[in-house]
Length: 261
Image 1 (cartoon, rainbow, N blue to C red):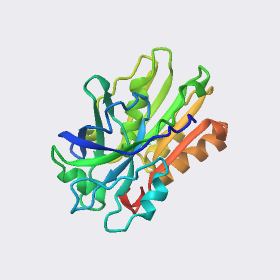
Image 2 (image 1 turned 90 degrees about the vertical axis):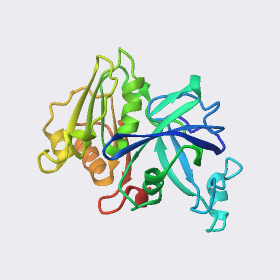
Image 3 (image 1 turned 90 degrees about the horizontal axis):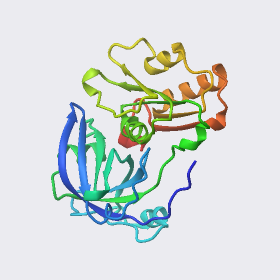
Image 4 (image 1 turned 45 degrees about the vertical axis):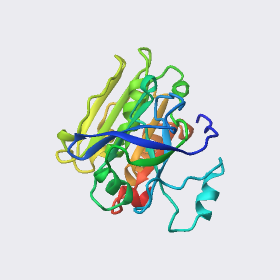
């Protein structure tokens, strides 16, 4: 896995908000946290600092020892911290797009994204990428996740080159939640709609799939039990080495994405 960068949190400001699917809001940010931000591509992720309801902007940790500093803050001013992925980075205009899956007021990030307006402020701390394009060694990759992993998957697919090969599975609630992806010729994207998928959803689909026998690596993200199930299947049934699988459980069934973050 690529090394995590040393960075400090900085303020970002909302410039635009758009609804890209019925349950996804795309928020465009500018400001000090975006200016000079490296354009890493792939699954470029960051720590996202949300202000308390009575704050204009979040109180940010001043150094790279951000977690110790956040924990030491009084609870009434301590920012809410979540993890998000850059959906698109336009370095020339110093803008980034971030997609938020909306699930009402069940958590602070979804609540914030459902109400956010241009001019609102938050905080960003660069965390680099987890996807390593060299790990496949020229062999095909398997990339799989649910709607919460869609921004990261879109970033990975959009950064891949014409020589890369990958099979991509994305599970979303229904067809209306699909998004256009810009995939190179060697990357095949397969959508799984939860409302019409077989029992077991994406895990069942992957178990039944004709996967390449020479997989170089797998990248898995989304609901925790889904990620665990696919990982076990790849190791136990497909012979994929554990060290060749990058995985992250973003949330747990029965808990909101915010609660699990």
